[in-house]
Length: 171
Ligand code: SF4
Ligand code: SF4
Image 1 (spheres, rainbow, N blue to C red):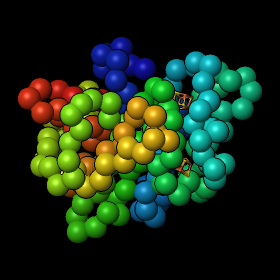
Image 2: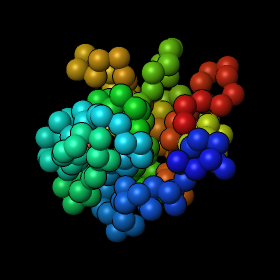
Image 3: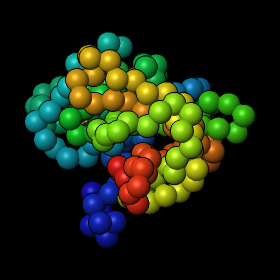
Image 4: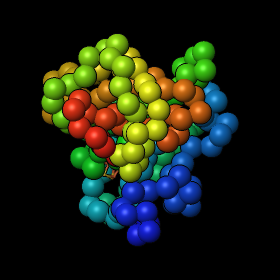
């Protein structure tokens, strides 16, 4: 993780870590982007994926590796990651829009249809967005997953939304 970037990751750093989907895969539909670069003993992402698209293996401190060819973009891994480090990016959402799904552990939850400010990895507002889906089944424990539609050109940058009445947000 870059010090000069004050703790948040850049796309270049994720690519260097081998954790970033290819441009071709982004064009095929929703795909998981795993932004986990700390070698900690953790692997719920691996067990969450019923498609075998995430591999941690042994030792458990390995960084997770995603197989973009196996990933369906289902999103099951997003709520299971205690590090809030997995996102689903869909650059094919339609009509110039992309969709980004992210874990959201703040209350109150937004509502579908809300117009919001989408924020980047550093919590900076980058564009307007519309909340299009909120998933919060019991199986997600305490981590709802929110999906926001944004201009497709911002889909690789957006990683959360600004909370109501508060500048910044989840990065
Ligand atoms: S989005 Fe679904 S298929 Fe892709 S890595 Fe996560 S759980 Fe597996
Ligand atoms: S569950 Fe999250 S924090 Fe844990 S290894 Fe997987 S991506 Fe990293």
